Image (cartoon, rainbow, N blue to C red; front, side, top):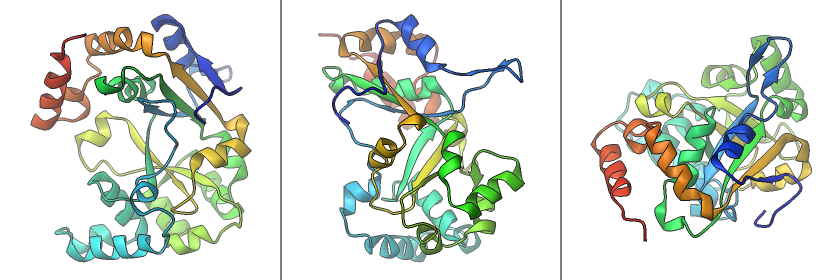
Length: 266
């Protein structure tokens, strides 16, 4: 995915970026703008859509069980809050445990923040992944499609997953082909709320989402932010208060914002 493909859109200005982020968002039936895309920003377009478990544990799928078992064993949390596999991976992901989940957002500008927050990567083109989670429902196993249809929703919640397929092992065995779902976590803290966050999860802890998207090219676009444009985009996001101070409430977010905000342009 490092090279420009037919699904890539290279933007040339801030105005062009704003326009492309809302691609296909007009809904004639509603007479409103409503995007069907999940957004994920990366500071380097060459980065793969590789989850934290795969980056940490490689192809050793069996380590997922041990990670979750020990997280549940040692976490000083109410046992009931870690009752299901979906609770475990959600809370684990939130606190930095290597899991198969990947972070996405409903907000295109939150994604742009993450594509431009690392000043050390300003010599690289950034990218915004846009995955149509509504279209992606069409290739889900039947049990998952039925559950979404019955709920009247386009994304899962932890509760709906618990009712439909509570164990990760059973989730993985629903199909011989890899698939991806999107689900909304509970509002554990302000960070999840402010980032307008939700997760994707593949049907294997070692599956690359890139490979799945190659087979389903109609599900995604990737907006390329040229490195020459990053400073302008970053400054305009800061002016709009799309910063670490908002997205990571607390002193750590404030410190990150100040560190970047006062970094001199060289």
